[in-house]
Length: 379
Image 1: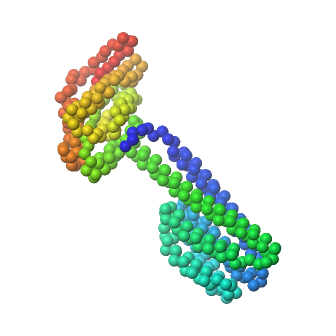
Image 2 (image 1 turned 30 degrees about the vertical axis):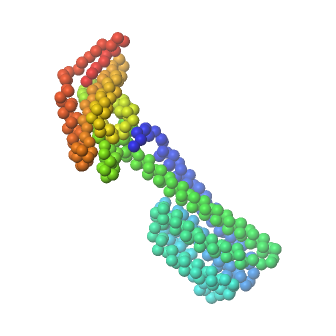
Image 3 (image 1 turned 120 degrees about the vertical axis):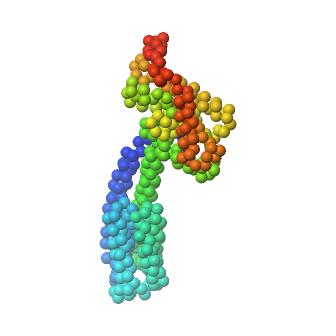
């Protein structure tokens, strides 16, 4: 685990990104509705043989495009989910009218109409059960892509078959095609927005997870992070040694200098053990833990001695006052001492308290006048 400070102001960035995403989505919906309105107006210019069928086709594409727009926003609120389900029903009705209505019978006589739209309608209906998952971003993206594939087939059929030799009609079709392309562009942007929203939610989840595993005062991993790492190592049967460290006389620091001074000592202590390069944790109060892969007794003695040496440095807590806080250390080895997580912690704790009491000297404060006139205290 990397022990590093978390100073990244992620939540404000996430909020701004969410607001920007909502704004862009609103603009895209308005643009899409505008393009749909413009597309519908061009349907009135087609010849008499195709006018009724064309009207149904454009109604279908309009409803389908609105359904796609609502579907892309479904993960954000229940109202968007209900809107997407309603738009699905309207699109289903347009499909049914296009295929089953007597007024559109001329359309079905066109080459390839039956072979294209009957299978399309069946595939469209087959996707209906998937709508139960549209509120889940990961599933929503896949579902939207499946419905979009059907939509693109409809657009492709329209662009391929509804053409006449009239230059005016060709001009109208060119304009309609441009509007279709703009619709597709706005839909793609909406899909991109959904992907971006999923990315934001993922980063937000990562941030909150990191915050939940970080001690707010010292900015090193906390007790929850320690237990997670211990469980992972034990589940992988990876040998390790757990060190438990405790500050001797820390209560006297709080009593004599106040809690702000105590916090200063804890942060200084965390920086010192963090500089050892091992995985270190604050597990509560003035108690810390370190995970190491070292098992040799001589190396353990050297590491323990290094703990004491590093912690021996003076800490300035108030003007003209410096203190040195001693450290008691206990350790336990997995799997030699125990295979149980709680028992390992108890063993290390007990060894630490034995050393604390056996090495404890006079509890009274010892004061030293330094050459610069300041007072140094050892607890």
